[in-house]
Amino acid sequence: MADQQNDAKSETPGAPGDAPGSGASDAQTKPNRTGLAMLAMILAVFMAILDTSIVNVAVPKMMAVFSVSQTEIQWVLTAYSLVVGALIPITGYLGDRFGYKRVFVYSVLVFTIGSALCSAAWSNNSMIVFRIIQAIGGGAVMPVSMVMLFRMFPPEKRGMAMGMFGISVMFAPALGPTLSGYIVEYLDWRLIFSINVPIGIIDVFLAVSVLKEYKVDQPGKFDVWGFLTSSTGLATLLYGVGIVADKGWSDKEVVIYLTIAAVCLIAFVIIELNVKRPMLDLSLLKNFTFTITLLISSTAMVILMGSLFLLPVFLENVAGLSPIQTGLVLLPQAIVSGLMMPIAGALFDRIGAKPLAVIGMIITAYGLYLTRQLDVSTSFSTIIGWLMIRAVGVGLVMMPVQTAGMNTVPMHKMGQGTALSNAIRQVSASFGIAWLALMFSNQRIFHSAAMSDQMNMFSASVQSNVGQIQHQFMALGQTAGQAQTSAISYIYGQIQLQSTVQAMDDVFYMTAGLALVAVVLSLFMKTVKAPKGAPKEHVMGE
Image (cartoon, rainbow, N blue to C red):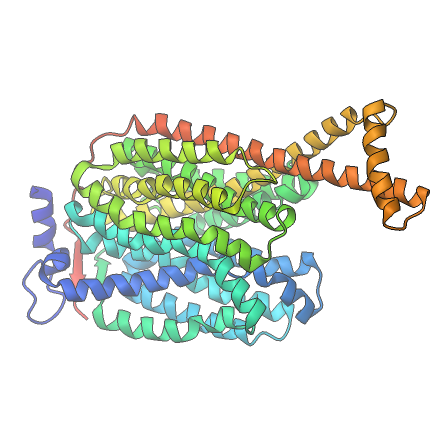
């Protein structure tokens, strides 16, 4: 408590009439203003995260409108994620140097302008450029919002605050395909971008009105080489990992990009350990609780994003659902995750993160273990039930674990801490999608080959099955030769279908194992104490 009192003494009034130190206790003195500030941050983060998933469903439509190939349109998706990943490390310095409120407002403004430009794009190249503009704004929103949130609330109330904040983090990725599917199917596809414009304008005015300015007195010189090596390293790493699923780890392009990433990131680590004021303070990783919570949340991110990426493959390619129907199947788990966030936050404030992490990851592992029974005959209600169980577990883990780790970061390093944790989670999400997608592809080939070997066309049982199917096609009017070809094609299709399902089950089995690894990691978490303050922090008035 002494550290918190020192923090309060070091802060100046945020507005005329505020008591000294009121910037550190807005949540207690001005609940209405704090609620509006939370709303401003939640809206911005929701829009930024939503745009990482909402565009996917509209890709076929944009390919037709712009007359481009799958490879060309892919850069509309890739450009956004690469820019976001490259910009995250610099957000801490920008907030310390120019003020977090100012960076937040300009980020939302740039994101809104980028969204308006995307809605008016006339070609694939123009869309890529406008998506980069959109990402420049969207990339800074999440880490900057987390810093302001941690400075708005005292440690004993951060759990509930992060729980409310986490609704947008968990709900947006799952809502994206549903919303995009509806817009593309029934409305104009450009609405997936233009819908951000009025919300962004309102959010800018709201942020200007209610947010306080948080700033560090002496942010230090800009770490140019740290920025160049980290941005290049993260961008090439995200791109290299992103194409692994299509090309494999041994592909020449993958090797080149991952080699560049390794060289740049090693150089980055060397630079950051030797400069006086590093852009990202890697010494934070010496903090055991901060590091262990990063490992747990990164594992949860791999599980979450990998499953969100692969499940639509089953629902659309195997079950034959449309994109909007797929989104509706995935929607209940998003609602459950959103509902669990404030509950988990309130529990965190009472009992801490460790029991929530252990129980949450056990529930997650159980949900994934059930899902590994997935089959072509599995009802959609059963799939929804399995996903909702997993959502309960992930919802209990994500925000409490992140909050526990960030609570151990000194307040004057909060910007660097959020930038570092967000960068690691961004890489974890990309790695999870690439790794699980590649595993799915390899397992599908393995099961297909194994079943094909078992289908000896000279065996009596196989010939009997082919004969029965052949007679059914002949009854439809085909000749004996045509019917035999159709029967063999049908059997081959069934092999591919079953191999797809078995590969999906293998992935869920693996992710259940990852969840159990996270359970073990959670057992090593320590009780988190209030973070130490820094005399150089203050809250500035508007």
